[in-house]
Image (cartoon, rainbow, N blue to C red; front, side):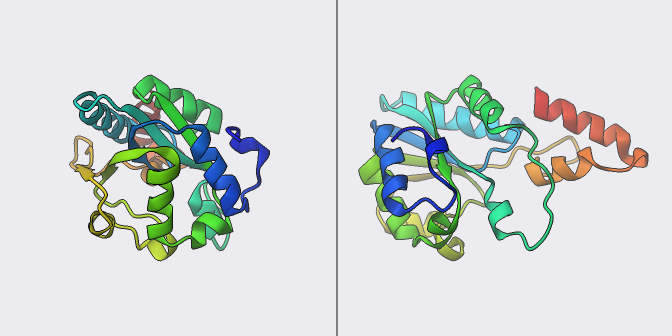
Length: 197
């Protein structure tokens, strides 16, 4: 099964495995929500591509739909910066050879990081992982880079891309700025340009 749209957010582990297997290839993986595919995300994909080229690996971007934030939220959340189809298109334009969309629900929220990492290696073909400074995965965000390295994964950490004020460019910040009141409109406009670039 290579179409994540055929399974629900509460897809079982077998369905997750089938999605990963459908994209199996020796690969360098970058992973995240990638909402908006802003400059920080594009930098991460580019860093992954540089690492992959030296080893003859495909670049695979693993992302999630819906955003994990929606699953964990205890109320309303701000909307996505772009549709999942646009996210896939932007990730490919940024340099991903393949984009794997995993349905985020209870199964992924509760999976132990070691099991998830094992599936990325065994089912997807991960040979190296390139992630941002604040990356973590698995139940209770236990799968930080140090933990993943302890499992034997090769993990590269890409530094945050920062704006002209030295602040980390993030989807959360961009979402907040896009709905900012008129007094903050100049920043909101520049955020919009950053997202659409």
